[in-house]
Structure formats: C-alpha cells, structure tokens
Length: 339
Ligand SMILES: *Cc1c(COP(=O)(O)O)cnc(C)c1O
Image 1 (tube, protein in one colour):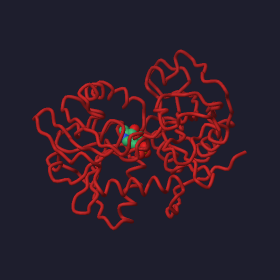
Image 2 (cartoon, helix red, strand yellow):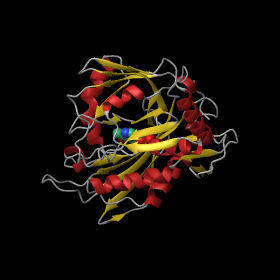
Image 3 (cartoon, protein in one colour):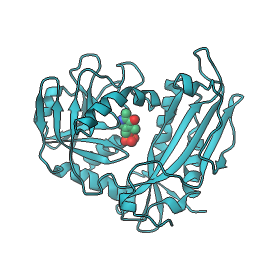
Image 4 (cartoon, rainbow, N blue to C red):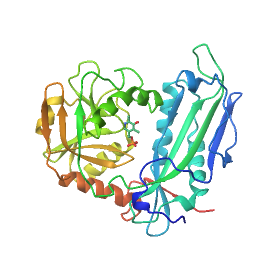
C-alpha cells in the first residue's frame, strides 16, 4: 500500500498504475485491454470532441476492517450508463463489460485503495466516448469505454459539516425534456457558470428549480436533493433529475428505519417546512445543508448549524454498509478478490 496522508488527499486527479479500455468497432465490443498510459490517441473529428457524445459514471471502492474490498452498487451504475447510452445514441455497453472493467481496474490498482477507517476511498471513473470521425451531426461508428481510478479523501475531513445552497432563476442545468436524466458531460458544461457564481458567493452548490415553471425543486449541480419532516424523507420527482444511486439507497434505508418516503413535486416554498435538508451523491453520500438562499427574492431558509439527527443516521448507516461494518442486507456490495 502507498503511504499517504489519506485524510487530506482531497479530490483532485491523481495517477494510478493502470486503466482499462474497451473499443467498439465494426458493430461490436472488443476485449478488455489494460493500459499504463494516462493518454489516448484520438481522431480530430471524434464526435465526443465536437458534439458531446460522452457519458460517464462515478462510484467508489472501500477497504473493510476484514481486509475485503467492496464496490458499492456497481450494477446500478452499469444500468445507468446503459440509459445514458440510449439517451445520446451510443451503443449500449453490456452490463458484464462494465462490471468486469470496473473489477479489473480495482484489482490492478489495489495499492491505491486507502486503508480502512481513514474516511478516504478509491474513486472509480468509467466513461464512454464517441471516437469515430463525423462532421455531419450523427452518432459515431466507433467508441471507447474506459475505467480509471484514483484515491480520494473524505468529503468532510473536519467532520460532517453543513454548507449553504443558492437558488438563482437565471440559469438552468437541463431542459425539461432534455438530457438532465442522463449522466453526460454536456450537462456539466452547462452548469459551470452557475456553479462558479455560487462558489464565489460562498455556497457549496446551486439548487436548481424546474426549468419550465421555476416553481419546483429539481436538484443540485452534481447531487440530488432531499428534505426531511415529520419522519418523512421527501425527494423531488422530475424528468430532468439524474437518478442518483445514493438517493435510491437513502430511500431504502429511510424505509428500513421506519420513515415514510415521498417522491413528488416539491414546491420551492416547501423549503420552509423541512426540519433537515441535504444534497446526496457518491462524493459525500450526504452533504447536510444549513441554509438555502433564494437570491431572486432575497429569502433564506435555515436548518441549524449542525447536521440533523435523521441525516446523520442515514449517513452513518450507508457508510457502515460501504465499509462492511454492517450487514449488507440489500446486497449492494461487490467484493473484489485480489489477483
Ligand atoms: C452523478 C450525479 C448525481 C449523484 O448520483 P450518485 O449515483 O448518487 O453518485 C446527482 N446529480 C447529477 C447531476 C449527477 O451527475
């Protein structure tokens, strides 16, 4: 194992030893290839460069106290990538290729997996890009699927600390019937300006409203939104939200804890009545929120300076399953054997 200050390695890119690649050519997927290069050689007219034919995934592997390596809900990421493929007309990557490539990328980089208990983990980044040349607007005939990994630090090196969200109506992340529900790079390019403005004001992210009516909560730039009140976990329903696997897992855990769950349209004004709110995604699991500021009407909603009890409970439960400290009753983890 590498010797590092695991707690403070942060979230930047870092090199690991190997990545895994798989080409789609002549209408079929080739074998998995292992590479030790951080670069790819690509045609200047590749569709990913010009027309954004690109989708990606993000998931994590954790080292358990028992020395076993667990990847969290890999199958769900594989299915979501298939949905992204359908969304931007890329050939559907078979689930087995996704799973094998992720497992192989982890196996080949075991020494980069942070030790149990330090809060850090191995971040896994699968991506699929159109590599075939086209200048007319149409899907490529060739594609490259890749998986690379890197250790990332705990999202909260100083503890589970709440941050602020910003509502602004002049920016949209995705159109109502657009690509918001797919994990594609284009959505992220579209959200950079608003994200930068939010960071400038000291907010951790933008909380987007639905782009059509600006009446309902949608999601944050890179994370889903939830609120808790009266022992009920409430999360917005909308066609432009990316279906977060963390959110899906928290919904299950909320039910396990005896809470009610509602997935429905959530009017902005309902922010007033939540006892706790949070953003959820792979990076932080839950990022508790202490304040939502609606800049257009200069109104703020406050949730206390410490993470709420239910958010804390849900967070700890999910983290314990990932670390292998609690029984994996829903079969969410894939154990990766070393080679
Ligand atoms: C990836 C992503 C999320 C979080 O999804 P997880 O599967 O929980 O990591 C939320 N919103 C957007 C826009 C995303 O791209």
